[in-house]
Length: 302
Image 1 (tube, rainbow, N blue to C red):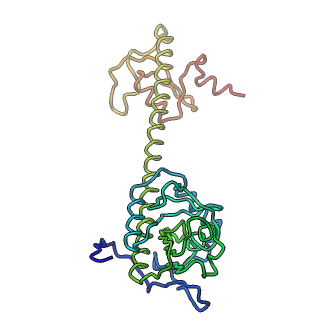
Image 2: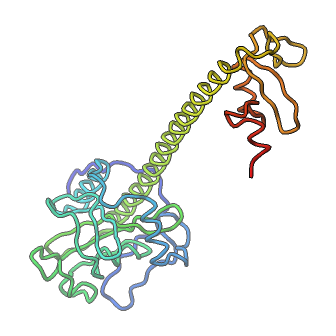
């Protein structure tokens, strides 16, 4: 770890790092180290999982930002393995891994990520073979042979815990206050990136909806224009004024009158297709033609 050039992070409110050990006297702070605010009392499993679904992060393609954060965490702790994890109901899914190729998820047994995600500060296991929280964990008893584990919870702006940034080693060891502080800062960066990602998702969907609505309006306008052309053609040989009567107050439209429109009060006027279309969009008027379902059809409705 000599001459390690650790990048500077944006300021994050951090209390004194707390190393949670196997000692019965170990305590955790009441404040959330990521947000600097007390952890919410209503962060139940239901609320946490609802927040997790809202962020739409589970089972998404690899994110280069998370990969870099996992790599940096491993560098700071000098461990062979680091992950950015998301804790679901019955599994821990890895948004990024360093040194754990080919593993996408593990079970959500208590003791490691499933417990660290609920901690109010850094969660450290110095020797998993003697720590009562991890003695029976499959990653400790199994082929991986986990011995050292340190994690910081990823906490959203509204206080929900989604996962962890964690490091793993196959040998027992200790963690320094500086290392756990950096780990907490990395978890805060993950939370901020998730917020930016969610905002981008919402913006893209809003833009798509606007495009669809514009397409729908265009379709409706085209259909209306076709109806107006049909009406104008049908009314061409009937007696009517020569010019459009809908030019507006004090103005005379110079376009030829092509069809008649009327409103529910019985008022009617002859209009060019442009002014007729405008009136149909902005006022409660009808095409005064029974065959096309105009005013008479409205008055004769069941």
